[in-house]
Image (cartoon, rainbow, N blue to C red; front, side, top):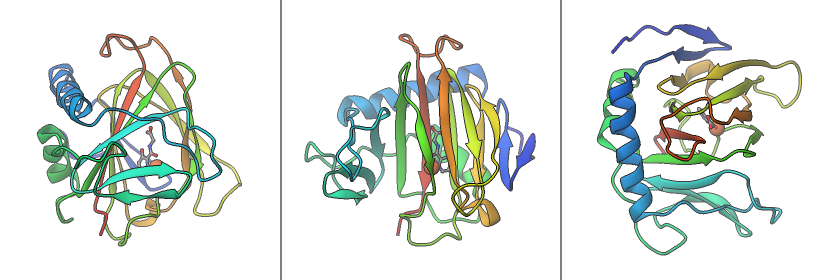
Length: 203
Ligand code: MD6
Ligand code: FE
């Protein structure tokens, strides 16, 4: 595994093709095992609209969003505790976030054909000294990056299966989102689409 970024974009370190095709298959199997225990669900925004992305989590905390607002919770909406974080994802965290404590959440987002994610900041965690590590599997997606304030010019890059990015330090609170996915560009997921795993320290 390489440890110097392929590119930096607004302080975000991007590691293209960090995972080999075989590692991508392993991580996908680990993510599927999480989904069997903690099925993907469709969160609603605090305003009550369904999000186009389906989600689940692994680790001590998972991210949930419903009409009561969004928060980290120790239970899946179905009432069960979250499964353990996939081992391959933990290994990536140890490589790329070596100075940080162990991650407490691995959020898994699934994007079908028309899913996207609006521009947002990740700021529900207690300590912004620790980075968010993000792993992409499956179809290509356009990742958009702004600045620490809403609005203004943005830059974008295409994330492909096996790419990893680290959003930390000065980039920890930049706005970012997923414009759209390029459905069918990868054969990794049998029915197409994209999985994104993000690892964080929550408390
Ligand atoms: C995604 N990623 O790639 C959405 N957040 O599907 C995120 O929202 C994200 O990639 C924080 C840090 C890295 C990320
Ligand atoms: Fe995010």
